[in-house]
Every structure is written in structure tokens, then in C-alpha cells.
Image (tube, rainbow, N blue to C red):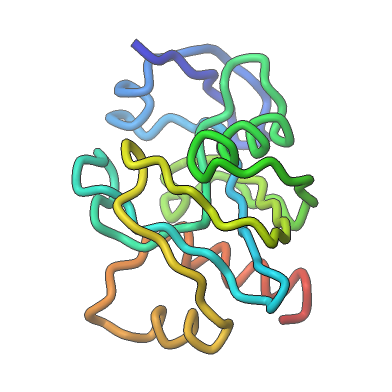
Length: 165
């Protein structure tokens, strides 16, 4: 049973609960998301497996995951980048987003990196993935037939504000 730390609105630790309890009761917890770009400026997006408990079969950030107890956001980002995409790259802080319904009650820190390595999606985590130009990301987000996680929609907007993209 995966146990995570629970946080208040100010992102202060207030306890622990199982992952299933956290999601069932909408308890605030932490997550890191990573946007992986190639040298041409294209963003890698993952397509979530149909077996995921939240947003199966949806496009999402390049990599993302819950922050483990006692782990910092940067370490989580590095771990998730390796576990989900088989990449070891330096990540750079972009923006922090407070927990809300749209983030699944996760306090999120978004990181980014650039790589010339080909992502190797973990088939236990990811069904598929592809690089998208910024224009293609915008088309994806505006196409009502394309399933996209609410968190990615928000993080894309926050990323664009932060980097002026």
C-alpha cells in the first residue's frame, strides 16, 4: 500500500494517508510534473494507459508523479523522469501551482528539461507518447475529441505565462 504525505492549503505537512484514501477523499498532496522538450522545441506528451485510476487514455505531461514521503520536488522530478521515460536529465524549475480540484488536489511543481535522447516510455505507466510542436499542443488542447488531463491544460497555460511562450 503506497502511503503519501498529506498537506494543508499552505503546503504544510499535516499527516499521512494511503494513496487510495488521498484520491478518494480529495486530500491535498504533492506531485512533480516535467515537460520534456527536444532541441527543436517540441514537447513530449505521454498518453496514459487505460489501466490508470485517474484519467486513463488521456494526454498528459511528459512525466509526472507523487512526491514520496521525505522526498523533495526536484528529486521526485528526476525519479519520475527516469521511471517513466528512461531519461536522466537536469531539470529546471518553472512554476509552482497550489492544490485545487483541477490538479487533483496536488500541490504541483512544474519542471522542464531538454534532451536529444529518445524517451523510452515505461509500458507499465504509459501507453504511447509523441513530440508536439507548440502549435500542435494548442490544436490538441482545442480539439474536443482529444482527451487531455485537466492538470496538463492548466500547466501548459502556466508554463506559457512563466516562459513567455
